[in-house]
Image (cartoon, rainbow, N blue to C red; front, side):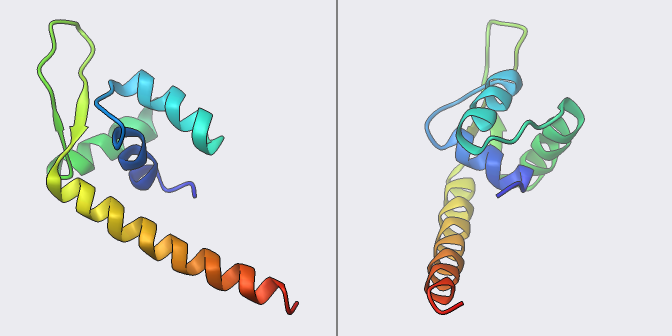
Length: 95
């Protein structure tokens, strides 16, 4: 699972985070290091699609959170991944 979009949505599923905090969280749970260009490009696309939104901050860092649409997309994508994983595991038993 290295799709930046899915990784960012998964990171934000447990609460709002700014970019650097997302990078660290993603590296921790997925063992994937997203570079700043990849991360912020994906954040921009997610924001444009209405899947995440910026949250006001008194700090210079910009936190983001999931929208209801973002939560739905994450739920759909994780269900798809679960089906693929179950199929792969079942097939590996016969390989």
